[in-house]
Length: 248
Ligand code: MG
Image (cartoon, rainbow, N blue to C red; front, side, top):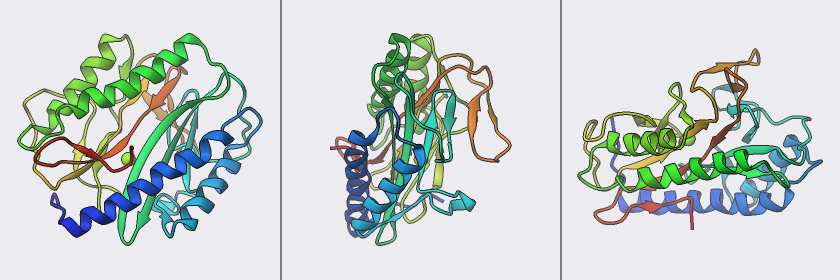
């Protein structure tokens, strides 16, 4: 069941999305060698609550933190803890916030100090792939045209797109229909309509696309140990240009 959002629901999603965006701005200066991922989590939670919102991920299916902090070969769902960031690391930080019952969800991958040219390129290709997909996030387009554009861009740059996890509808629920894969056939899938809200989130591996989950039941790593990057925004389909609620 895909929910079409009303004007008042969209206003709430703009509010939660803006809080997510502002949380990244709040964290950015803290993302330096020596900081622990738990310290970043605490800073994010305090900021989100200071805005009158609640971290979407905290206790979601039992997730024990407010952000996902995924370093280097961790693709998604890294649990914040005592790990200290080092110069040259890359860290994907996924943040969700719920305000007045509506969620915003976004992810950015950050460089810690100076990173290798390969890691820089991985981050850039991942971010750009989102914007390639965004070109098809329009009323009347087919959903998998977004997926295909992401896949084509990532693979033509020599990286691989994760298959086991995908983007999702979002609104009153953090995850709702439809699923938004990052690979697929252009011109297929459901027809997008004005008022749909979807989180599109390419997860890109430098090596193969296979992943595995660690014994903590959450942390997803690349099977071959290669690096991974992740980029996400919440998108509102309009009758014109798509609107990003988590990007300004
Ligand atoms: Mg998401």
